[in-house]
Length: 601
Image (cartoon, rainbow, N blue to C red):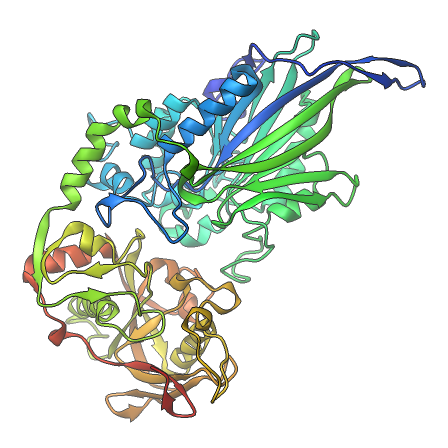
């Protein structure tokens, strides 16, 4: 028997039969040989599963950091209002009862809209509002959503409140209660699609989240939840779903397809395991992929045990794409069998926003726009992150300056007060900028788009050098004399901008003519070469300190201070209290790209 939403089926599927969706149309019957070689009319049925992922708090086609309609180099559009239009179109074409709508996680973090209802006017308040993402997804009519790792960024109480506000279950077969080992969220959802043939199609959606939660949100989940591997939990649940009568099994996995992990071997489970699940766990028909922020219209993976193809699709982040899985079924030997699956992605920029969604959340949107446009200070001159990936820029120096100052003040009067404080920061957005003149919350928040908090860790000179060498893998190798093409210089090996750290407080060169691992030249502190045994305090964000990016040493280094305030808010508070941002206080060229001693830029 299915359990309640804290067990197996969840609120929207809490009855023993699951959810029945009426009105499904059947494909025309065709001649087919039965199991004994006789020809007759085969019963056939088709249906569609629609999928989103990594919505990251985007309802409107709006960029709260630029206070303008969203745009990028490919002129993508974003947001659930656009997704709603696409979903409505597919439902009109194929029948409401022939479609399911699911999500693969990372829903409630990422924009100032989602931040506002987590921190400024939190949904957990006594008479707190309903989260905009819950309102929009309820209105659009989602059937189920997998948990993403960013669902845990604001703590479990807020996540539970969001779960309570959703009219669909949040699934996490590998999110377990630490005390009991039982699922902390519904592992799956099962629904029935009615057919004119007298036998409903039972569709199971298994939700899998990311084991990296145990690392990235350790402060929120340690001792409360555990996150075993996707493959092992899928191997446990898929046979059970089949034994419960599931004709079709779809996995919604907040996990990419690369088979790699950003945190190396700090956990015994693969971060991006969706393709491995398809290959190694029999009985899965399709996987909605998330987490990697990639676009995969359709990928077919052959299951090693059955030889059957599993179809994977990953729609682009923020509601830029909608995955569409089309299933063709045939009645065979007393049950529905999946005959074929295909997938494609639809582009949100091809449609207008659904006015029903924009009207529904117009007040919330206006409130957040007013909030982010509050003036908190002024800046003596403009600063931009456009060149930050390859040049030491004042705007990244500013983040490091505030972080280092915060740590120094926190360590005053302690045994570590006399140690030099270094700081790491990454370019989270190349479009981030601080204007000359008035500075608003959105200007400052645009420098730090993640909800990271600040820590202080002890490191040695030798560890610092290895840390910087690891970071410098971000650059392609360009021999002396060869042309340096800026567009080809960074992101070597697919390393994202947020996993390239610039460290302030020391000076060093990065020789891009050398191979990775031997690039750091002239590492010095206060004009003196850094010795292996030198000791420093590193101001570092909790993502990096917990192993994010798999940087060496920092995750195992001794923590001497930590704070629960987001770095973004720390910077905003600094601007409020100081009133003025003056690069003369903090801007300096601490690192350079060189080739054989000659500066590149």
